[in-house]
Every structure is written in structure tokens, then in C-alpha cells.
Image 1 (spheres, rainbow, N blue to C red):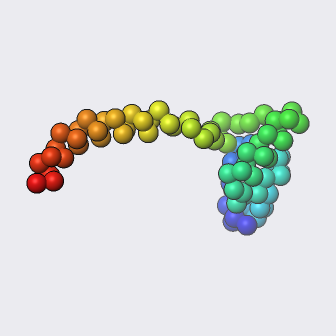
Image 2 (tube, rainbow, N blue to C red):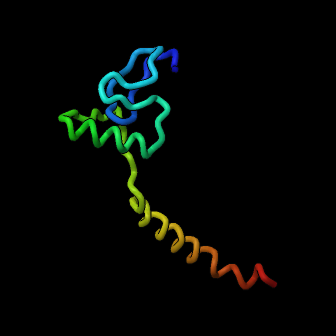
Image 3 (cartoon, rainbow, N blue to C red):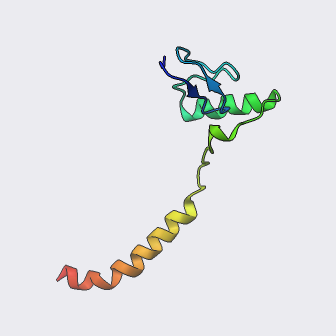
Length: 87
């Protein structure tokens, strides 16, 4: 139980120190990503509004383009040097 005010990661609402669950959506202050997603969806389904302080939850594959781009850049930079390194 935190001894400071904390913002819920599911809904973004502020909670008092000494509490371990959000007063608005019921999410635990130590919830896993899957639990946060579930509480967030339930909160929205019951008419709740997610505040910007809740932050964005990244979905699987969302950063895939960055991974592909990074691999391409590494190939362009590193591949020309590989023959001289192997000798």
C-alpha cells in the first residue's frame, strides 16, 4: 500500500495515500499489464472516461515497424564491415 498519492494506470484518476485499489475503477496499484487492460475496458464499458494521466498502453506489434527499420539500418551499416572483421 503506497504512502503517497498515486494515479491509477487503468483510469488515470488520483488516489489517496494508504489505499491499494483505485476508488474509481477498482484497479490495484500493483496490477499487471493484463489486469490494467481489463480494468480499463470495464471502466470504459460502464461509462468511465480514461484520463490522459493513465498513459497509453502499447499493443503487441505496435512498434514492429521500428524493429524492422532498426534491423535494416544495422544491416546497411554492419554488413559491409563483416568480411574484414571475419579475417
